[in-house]
Image 1 (cartoon, one colour):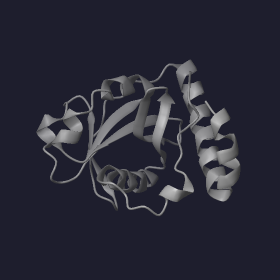
Image 2 (cartoon, rainbow, N blue to C red):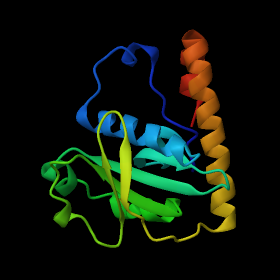
Image 3 (cartoon, rainbow, N blue to C red):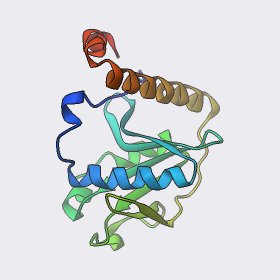
Image 4 (cartoon, rainbow, N blue to C red):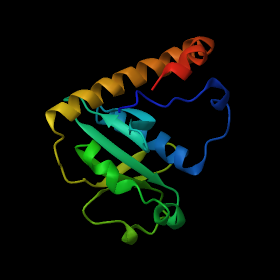
Length: 164
């Protein structure tokens, strides 16, 4: 079962960002330069929540996992499950991260809270057409729900229990 999204309640908007969230913000800003839009903490399927799902102008889907340190990376046992939900997969890390521990067959982005640079492109593995269609629909619905939650948080909370 595909989930439409997870979204940030308005109460979280004013809280300070965690290190991984800062990296995600910088990466999302940089992705705009490549004409990609992003949704943070997107759930392509129950049990998987990617740090950043990015959608390109031709329908490309990139997943970017933001790691704030060695311990954060070592504790991530789910990342291989993300590979089947994107055309390209990347790690986003800061300048102090020990990049030699990251798998060579994945993309690498150097980031901070304000921007990012792609150091290594992730290999392209095109999504099957049916999965892409469902994923793009979930992305669009997730973006719409987040926008509506920002405009009218009370209404979303009334129906959030009915969302998958």
